[in-house]
Image (cartoon, rainbow, N blue to C red; front, side):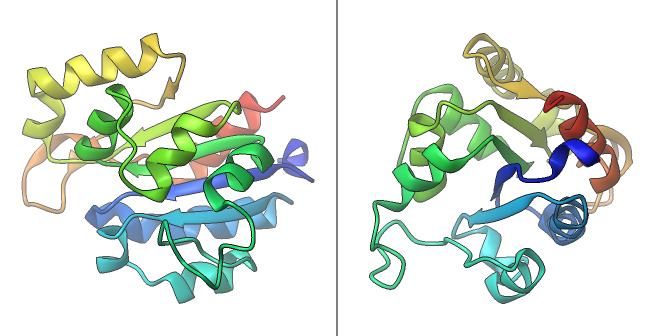
Length: 182
């Protein structure tokens, strides 16, 4: 993880149960020397708190597009420009669909349009959602746009199903990031 030293990672967290794994992901990235700036969707705040991620990242967590306490700069531009890499974990079906179609209705999706840094999507969702033709078409479009995608793991899912859709383990995501940033 030596190549993470001094790197700025913008971590976008989508609103899925796997958001709890983002806490460990932040911890590992910081331990590896990266500066981590967390951006949470409104739905993500239902699963983990900004305070937890702020404590782990040692940076303010961005949650709202218009937040007067955070808007001394235009935050989506400042974060987009600062990033060496943008990581979306968990990337929900909703986030993937928005990104595939260039929608920008919140802070995170605006950052995706504004950044010139590479973007890595780490999907997490129910197996049937992952396999759905619309999701697969969106994944294909994401790749065509030049974004990177880590395939989800298979196994037991939080919804009680079994199959492909699990967020990759944080250690595997960090290893992928390290390799990518070499």
